[in-house]
Structures are given as C-alpha cells and as structure tokens.
Length: 219
Image 1 (cartoon, rainbow, N blue to C red):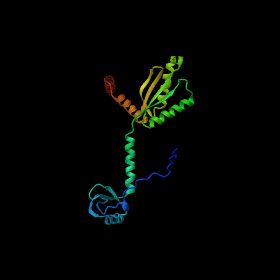
Image 2 (spheres, rainbow, N blue to C red):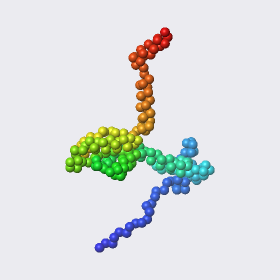
Image 3 (cartoon, helix red, strand yellow):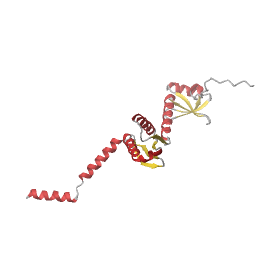
Image 4 (cartoon, rainbow, N blue to C red):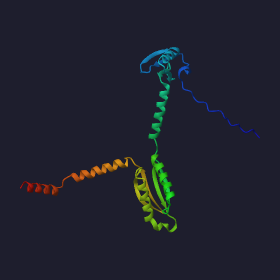
C-alpha cells in the first residue's frame, strides 16, 4: 500500500511586488512621481532618485524595452487599488431573490426572526420573497395571510418598498419586497410638499368667491 501523502503545512508563497531592490534590470525607463519623464537611466540612478524623494521605485511594465518604472508611494498606491477593487465589487453585486417563509399562525419571536432575515437581505441589495405556507385546511385563511404580509411590509417600510402586492400562488401566498432607493423620510417630505402645492392652486370657484368677497369689502 503506498504511503499516504503528507499534508503540506507551509504557507503559500506570496508573489512579492517588483519594487526597489527587487528590480533587477540594469536599464530602466523612469516616470517621476509628478508624471514627468526622467528618460532611460540605470537601476542605481533610479533607486537614488526614489530614495531622495522618500518614495518607492515600482516596476509597472516589465515587457517594455527597457522596462518602465514609476516613482511613487507604493503603500498609498496599493491602498487606492484595493479601495477601487472593493468599490467595483460592490457595484457588480448581482441582485438575488432571497426568501423568508412562515405560517399565518407565526408567533412573535419567529416573526421577529423573519423580519431580521429580511432586513439583512435588503441591506445586501437583494429582493425578498415573503411566503406564507398553507397546510391542509389552512388554505381557507388567505385573508389572515394577506394581513400578515401587509404587516411585514409596514414593519419593513424603512428598508423596503412593495414590488408585488400579496398574491396567492398555489398553496402559498407571496409578496415581493425590493430595497428602498429613496429614504422613507424624504419620500414622505416630497409627498407632503406635493400635497401643499396642490392645495395652494386656486380653483375657478375659489377665485370667483375671492373676487366677490373683495368687491363686497370695497362697497
């Protein structure tokens, strides 16, 4: 029987960046920190320039002839690259539909758990499918299931808006919620402002009444 392979406990070898003393090319085309060209100079001269500026010499194009290096703050550059990668990952988030299931007889504790799950999904940018499951004769109580789903929509109104109203689907009743794009407070303010604007528009009847009152006052 062949011996069992031993588990390699060594840490994986990390690829180190080509900066400063790790650059081995004798001639380099160097770009200064401000973007100006320093031309083709020796490795030693490039390292001296980077040292004088208290910055790093970073290899940016190894395949060029001669290789191209840039003088920069490598720590800052690395941080900005990681930040850009994280932002790109956030923007590329694929919206998924996550589901929370319950019975119409759900108790308060279990209901709070479902609310917490839905909040977590919505904050991740996902849609939520709220499903009430009927078993046996429970199908007769669709009205209670609808009340439960509308209660959930109300409790989640800060984070979500209803994409699809409660609807029966087979032996289930479902409702879809989507993450709220506009904060609820701003939405209410906009609605209130619109309502005030409507009230301030004078109707023909109001205008006629105002004119009659003005004439009466003048007499």
